[in-house]
Structures are given as structure tokens and as C-alpha cells.
Amino acid sequence: MATIFDVAKYILERKGEMTTWKLQKLCYYAQAWSLAWDGKELFPDDFEAWRNGPVCPALYRLHQGMFTIEADQIPGGDSSVFDDDQRETLDVVIREYGDYDAYSLREQTHGELPWKQARGGLPPTANSNAIVSKCVIGEYYGSL
Image (cartoon, rainbow, N blue to C red; front, side, top):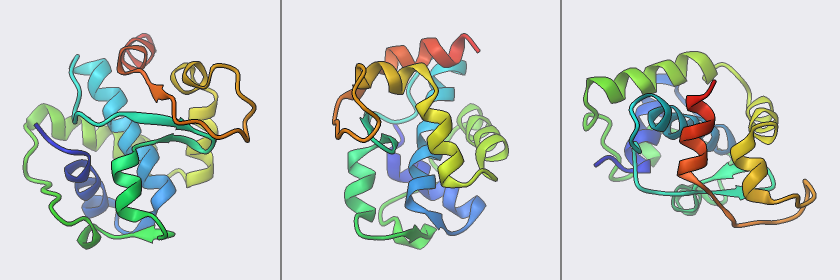
């Protein structure tokens, strides 16, 4: 199975350098649409409902302290591990979301059920490490 680092590397190789905030959101949408379209997770890591939207802690630990990131800064990521369906999902996510800036992606995730439900009514500025349920993600995006 692929890892969050494989997904991040794939995205960065196709879109180039970007903010770490944007990368987090693109990886989230890759996972979301894989759950919706393929009925299975793209990678095993969870996202947490942080105040700036969904964040994968493992990816965050890699880029902590960085503002932007490039593909060569993802050690161990392998963008060649994906099958055709997975590549198609990733390419659609990149095409549909890749030109948005990080703030727009943040605002979009804040308006969607999976992040809001995981936060459980917390104020927007409150910290949270609640897991965004993969079941809720798959059901929500699958219904769109």
C-alpha cells in the first residue's frame, strides 16, 4: 500500500513547489476521492481536524518548520507505486484542486462535513487533534 509520502511526492512532481499547507489539503483530497471512487484508502494515515483544516501528522512532522516544499524534500516517497486507478484519482485531484491557493483549500475543507463533524462544534481557532473519520470522508465525498 502507498504511503502519504508517496502521494505527496507524486503531487509535488506534477505541480512543483508549493506551500506545505496546500500539500496537506491536496493529500487530503486524494484520500477523500480514493475513498469515494475506489472504496478504499489510498494510504493508511489519518487526518486530524486541525484549525487550519485536515492535517496528516506524519506529513506535518516531515515538513514542520517549512513554508514551502519540493518533491526532493520527501525522502522515501515513491511516486511510481500507484496503479492506474490510483494515478487517475491523483491526476483528477491535481487537475481539479491543484490551481487553488492554500487559503481557498482551507476554506473549502472548513465548509465540508468531515472536518466539521470531527471538530464537533469547536470554535474555528481552537486546537484539535480529533481524527477525521475515513468512513465519514468516503460517505460524504461519495454522495457529491
